[in-house]
Image (cartoon, rainbow, N blue to C red; front, side, top):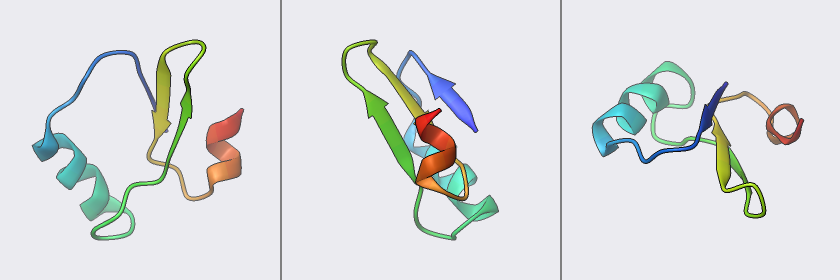
Length: 48
């Protein structure tokens, strides 16, 4: 799991996707805190 506070490149997203689902990245956004959690098997893992 990664917590993002800054933008990342599409290439980094592609590499993360290759390690899990092939062409998909799961993510959860906290708009109040301006952060994004990505790269976990379940959305519920990212919500914490």
